[in-house]
Amino acid sequence: MWAGDQATKRWALASLTPGQIRPFLGEVLQFTLVFNPGAAFSLGTGITPVFTFAMAAVAVAILVSLRRLNSRWWALALGLLLGGALGNLTDRLLRPPGFAHGHVVDFLMLPHWPVFNVADSAIVTAAALIALAAFRGIDFDANPKSSTGADEPSTGPDVEVNRRG
Image 1 (tube, rainbow, N blue to C red):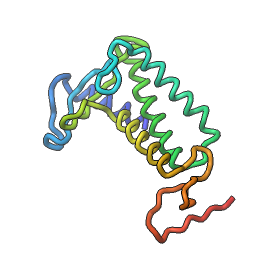
Image 2: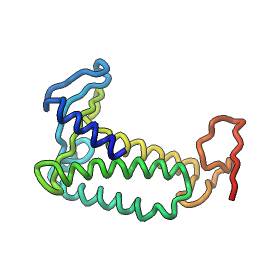
Image 3: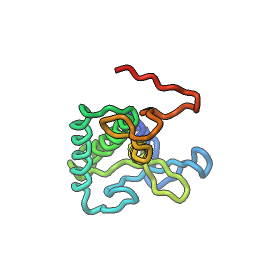
Image 4: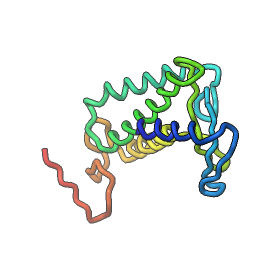
């Protein structure tokens, strides 16, 4: 995830001009280069170092918790969250205007939505998976509490889960 995010940001920096919109899928998906000093929706533009610290803390917390991980749902969600956090953290640390103050490169634009990037997409997807895992009763470090007994997304009503100890 991190590599894909950084590769798409390199493409955006080389191919797009700030402030100019380039249609990709009509008006449904367009490209425009934006440098975001804040968080989602450009909130908190004056506290960039706080976001830098928060992303670093999230990454460390995920890495520390991996040894307890016993769920593919959570592994996928935390992998996406880690990749997204590291993608935007890389921007905060290495991009202008300077270390821990760097602006995140955003370039994907949907109608009526703030401009975002691949890392942001990973973070939002991770949040949805975490909510779904919580709704289904899937523990981080144990089997689900639900009556299905399955820790994996079901592919249909006739699927049987085979667990070997």
